[in-house]
Image (cartoon, rainbow, N blue to C red):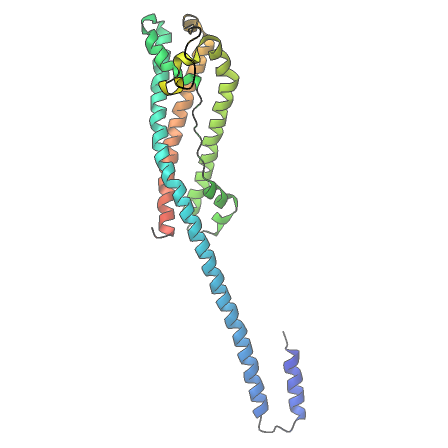
Length: 251
């Protein structure tokens, strides 16, 4: 862009009697210094902006690290519980399949978890906000960006499965178990502290020939085996992502 003021100064200079060129040189120096000053200010502002963005990114990474570390431990805990529930339901199915009335106490002990919905959800507010806001695209490390996207996909799948389990319990399991099983009788000691234990006894005799119960327990067994596989892979993914985050913030 042509500096109109500078052009006017040149025209005025030609009309002047400054034959030595001293005035023109001084004006040129002034203009150059102003331009350099502007460019320098823009450069410093750019560096400051970059520093602020980096500082904000470091804080975001630290927040995500603090979310992921306890989630890895939670994943190990969920996996342990999944294995226990798989064992519970396998025992129930074998007892029902063999119509083994002598194992009724074992059936009571192992069928209890069917009456409850376990929380299988994971929550990562900082990670989800980072992914959904499009900040992943700004990451220079493509592998780290890929881990974030994969983690969000796996998280959505796990939470969707939990929502399905809750819906299944409300629509299918509860109507059946409420009809034949006494909840207080099959509750854990900790749960029994918050209820009145007693009432009509569970009617296990009709359950040995109940196809609906057989299918429900098998479906729960299938769900927890699915859950187990995905919790293992998801926990491993969290460990990889946390290592990548620690590299980004030099932890």
